Each structure stands twice: as structure tokens, then as C-alpha cells.
Length: 296
Ligand SMILES: [Zn+2]
Image (cartoon, rainbow, N blue to C red; front, side, top):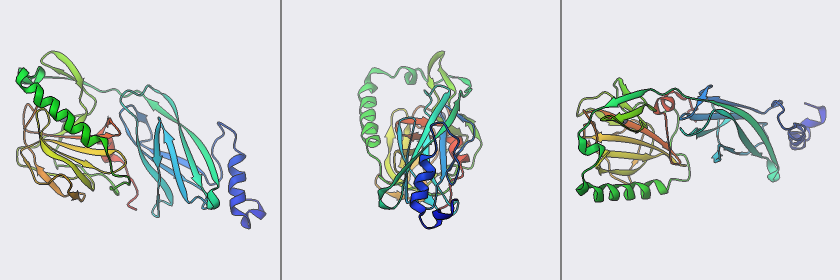
């Protein structure tokens, strides 16, 4: 740091930033890291940005989404959750962050973030024919289910309600991974958008992190399901439950029992389907569980 910078920290902060040309490597007090280090399509991301002390607020954009960073005393950094949709093509994408200093002074930094192609497996499933092509008499109910979910997904709490690591919703081994192409009765339907846990009926299912219950009811495909809004468009979903133990509107803590596992809805056997949705896109829950957000 230049000697006069001690007296004029804000000026120096701006000089440091404006001296960077496009594509330059970050230097000085700015740096950005992300988890996982190797990003693929379908991956949740945790960005951590270190800034000069003068920055009092930090926002950003990545893949067309606005990010709002939280400051942490533990890492002395700013962190934000983001996601790479399944449809994202491999390539380099820009994380742009904007720091605000005293007196509304702004400074912008850009970082190139590589996204590689994920290699998701195929899986073949046999289910009752009615679930591949639902019977006509169920179509009205399925439409109604979709309208209810659409309404629930349309709003989100403005601030993050979660803190620290996300935990597995059941103590059980994984029986189905995210992203696998699903072939139902010989017909390719879609990609599996959750993580399946092998649990018997009646196993407690717990909240992966804190938030607000936005849905707790039965649907044709999902069976009895619970969905938690963790704020800013991040939702976790718990499907095929035999019993629901929370109500819509409830605030829940990390680890709180939401219900008991089961095999309701489109399920070949009892299991827990756990899914992560961020601003309309399903992301890999296993990666979410492996992230290390600061505890505060
Ligand atoms: Zn599943």
C-alpha cells in the first residue's frame, strides 16, 4: 500500500480498483473463491469474496442472477449462494461483484469462472403404468397440483434464512443420484432432479437448514411432501412422506423433524427424495451438503 493510503483509505481503494484493466488478475485486497472448485452444470455454488476493509456492502451477478453477499466474521469474507442450471453449457462465465464503500463509492471486480460438463448416469425404472401416462381422471388434480406449486414458488423470503452447512435430511445411504436420465417403462422422461435416500417407511425426515414451510401437503406425483423456503429463492423439498409433522407457514430450524418417510406418490418403494431448487432450477443436493458456508 502507498504511504498516503493510510490517511486516505477510500481513495486508495478506488485507485486500486480502477487500475485493474479488464481481464487482469485480481490483486491487492480483492479475491474470489468458489466451492466446489470444479463447477459443472447442475451444481450449487458458494462464492466467497475478500474485499478491502472499506467495502460495507457487496452485491454480484453470475449467470444472469443477482447475488447478495453476506459478511462473515469467521472467514473475514463475503459469501453468497448461487447455482449453475442443468442447461448451462460448458464454458467460462463471469462473476461480477460490486462493492460499496462509505459515501456510496462503488468498485467493481470480475472473475472468470469455468463450468465443465457433468457426466450424469442413466437409470431405468419400472413403475405402475398410471404414473408414466397418468389416467385421464387424474389430469385435473395434476393441473391443480401444478398451480399450487407455481404459486408457492412465485414468492420467496427476501433475506437468507439459512446458516452454516446444510445437513442430510435422513441418516441413510443414497440410492439414487441427481441428474441421472430416467427411463420409465422404456420411455425417457426426464432427468432425476433430486437425491434419493434408502429409508424404510417411518424414518424421521429433518430440515436440511432453517427456513419457512411453504408447502406441506399431498400431491399426485410427489406424494406427501414438505418444501422449505430458505430465502432468496433457495428451496429444499422432501417427497413421498408417509406422515407430515409441520404446517404451511411454520418457521423451522435446521434438524427439526418435518415428517416420516414413506412411499406415497410416484415411488416404486419407500424412499426419501430430497431436492434443491434455486430460482426455478433444480441443483445437485449432494453438492449442497458438501459446501462449507461460514457459521456466521
Ligand atoms: Zn428421487
